[in-house]
Image 1 (cartoon, one colour):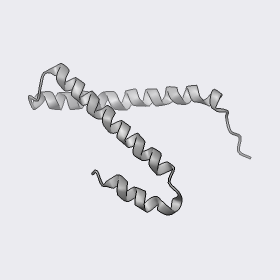
Image 2 (cartoon, one colour):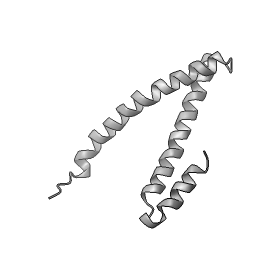
Image 3 (cartoon, rainbow, N blue to C red):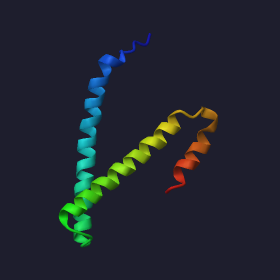
Length: 89
């Protein structure tokens, strides 16, 4: 028997875990991209940091939208969603 935890109990720990994951995944990526942009003499340190942060947040939002679409598609159309999700690449 499957026991489901009500959303009002499970939501705060899940949100906390996602927040921790974002911190440990997003921050190092932004720092590395900032360093690369700075080494390429693309701009100043603060400008490179801001641009790297905005780029990563934008790509995360696009990824979340694609994931949301993929989750809500019937199984018969899964190949079409895969094809559409690979088109920007």
